[in-house]
Amino acid sequence: MALLIVLLALGLVQIWGSGGPLHRDAWFGHWQSLVFRRQALRERAGIGFGVLVLAPVVAVAVVLALAELLLGWLGAILVSVPALLYSFGRGHFNDALSNYLRAWYQGDLEAARDAAAPLMTARDTDAAAQAPDAQTLHRVVFRATIYRAFERLFAVLFWFLLLGVPGALLYRMSQMALESFSRNSQESAVSGISEQNEALATRWLWLIEWLPVRALGFTLAIVGNFAGCYRVWRERLTCRETTTQDVLEHYMEGALGGIDSSECSAGVAVNEGQRLCGAEVEAMQALLSRALLMWITLMALYVLFW
Image: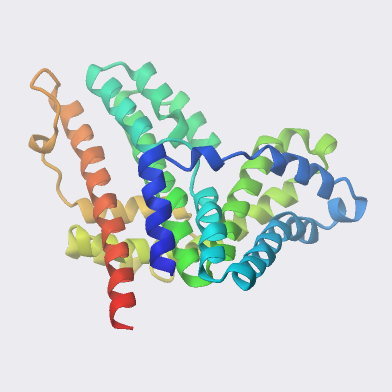
């Protein structure tokens, strides 16, 4: 059942480019305002954050249970596929990356920075805006892109396979809460959202990303440069301080190994530095595709033999 749900959801993503038709998040802002309107929840960051994130998860879990009870496997699919699609990351990842590479090969750094904006967090956007040269901009975008691919798909699939639809939705609600807290951090006195809430959400998200990021890291070692990635994976296996973005960047660099500019798909008019950076992004994209294919293959083998 889980494999069928994943395949249906990924098939719709291929058709739409994302889960866009279901990504309507205005309700979350209204829900957040309703939760933090209460004085008790504003003053107790942990309780307020828990209600904000867990209440929608519990509601969907109840709907899923009722649908399965009334309609059996059909009800489970009718609820699970839209819920999983909603849990996937926002925006068109491949389109944004293609636009970035096009501008990068043309040497238009402003256009490249604008094209990469959907791939970056607010902190990454600030770093990109302050990038003094092309190489610095590339490193910012490269690091942001790896994390965006992870949070929009791999982390969601990991928790879906482990805990079902509630697990996938819990991860997305946690992401949405942190993004909302970050946007409103300067208006905490008005919105009732304190810096304590943002810090709590950041730490919680790091905790629930700890397992999936290491699962992805081991996958990258298998589909990429095993020796280089596995060494980094083993070094970072029990690390409790490094951010998810930093760990992913180290994993990807190890999995890519030595990148040759000849692997770049751009024409000869592109200079050597542009070709090398572009080849790195293209190789990263190919590695992520192979990693996803490996996860789906393992799921299929599990269904067949267990």
